[in-house]
Image (tube, rainbow, N blue to C red; front, side, top):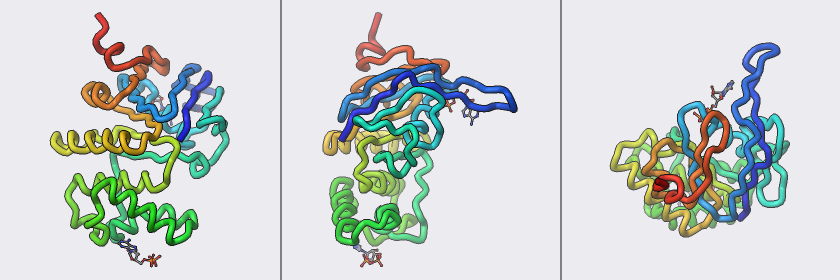
Length: 230
Ligand code: ADP
Ligand code: ADP
């Protein structure tokens, strides 16, 4: 497990030859080991950009991102000890639940026993143990979403990144999956960054809420501090 630090992080996108757009303006923040932080703010304020820089899917134009003591700026995504859960959690349709969860670990060349141990542990936490032989088409929406989370957990990441994972779900499944994420965090205590534009999600999931606007951090506090201030 590890803390996550942003030190004067800048992101500039090249928009045309000789033109850049600054999406993140020198953001600094320290997220404690095991903390659950929700990032909110209007569309285009830089939420995904921030997440994608942590994941290594976007370069960092200036400043530093650290996971624990380690500067990750130039590390490949696979070397960063992170796992990301997206809203479009495409599972491999031809593979069993077990293989869907095991796939990334097989690619990394982990020994078979270790893969089996991790998948079974994740399946226990997510109550998927009885479904390991099924194909995605034989699962309910909620079960599929849990397999997607299982695929992230088996990586044993230091940091969990959630990019609006609930926004494509119907109301019931949204609540169910939110509770599942809360339970996961209670059990595993993995440092988490969760992007949403839904205030209810922010209030129920966050230990602290980071409010972004125009590529800057406007507030960073507990849900009470952010939402109930007179
Ligand atoms: P959010 O996730 O908060 O909706 P984004 O991080 O996706 O915001 O985008 C932040 C800003 O950066 C937006 O103004 C967006 O248009 C711009 N942006 C995002 N990706 C690119 C890109 N690849 N090239 C140029 N501008 C981009
Ligand atoms: P392989 O690497 O060729 O898949 P394994 O002997 O690890 O070989 O597993 C064979 C198949 O059995 C796997 O593809 C997986 O679908 C299934 N499997 C392995 N372990 C478990 C398990 N603990 N629970 C359910 N299915 C499993």
